[in-house]
Image (tube, rainbow, N blue to C red):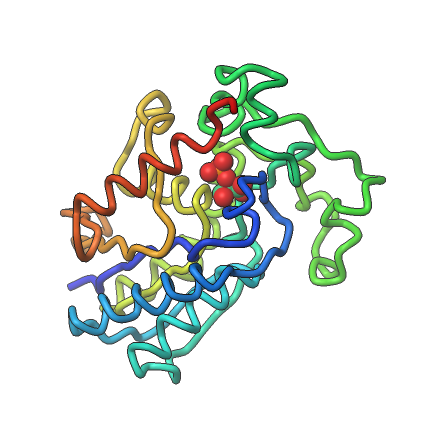
Length: 249
Ligand SMILES: O=C(O)[C@@H](CO)OP(=O)(O)O
């Protein structure tokens, strides 16, 4: 039997709090975000799941969320792999901008397309921009052509999937319980793939911070069921709040 898969979006980050587009910018968790991560750990501990491996991105908000959750579960010894392919979707030239101000400037509809459409990427960040990942030492060993200056959800899925197939799926097929601590949009890409969500429907899907999402999978890793742990209404309200972040002021 395949192992269980838990997807966990990081807790509130400083730029979630400030309502700024974040993408690959490596912002830290807030105190609330740390509490959310510990709370996710408590929900997982109450559930009784034991992880065999945890995967996360190379961005500290996801790494620390994973850490705090595993610590709360008293499973700090679990094998961990960090990989850039689980990073947040690159938000291009929008990174750092206030979401509500951007909606006022370009219109809520345009911002919704940039945030939630499947295949329209936000405006691209120039390679000369010091914020472009080609200037970040953590990506220095990667082929520079793999490093995005913007990404649609489709492009995000394209770079998440090789890691799913090479690293995550074999562990699940071996029966291991797997934690993936990542980001709103890298996880939306995975959910789209696992649940076969259409390009249209994915525009309405939002993932709340710090609430574990459990998948039960068959031997071929088809999703049999998925549900947020804990209070389902609270998870739905938190997802709605994410959807509403880019309303004009
Ligand atoms: O800014 C981002 O990188 C993401 C996640 O916080 O935001 P959004 O929900 O607008 O896609």
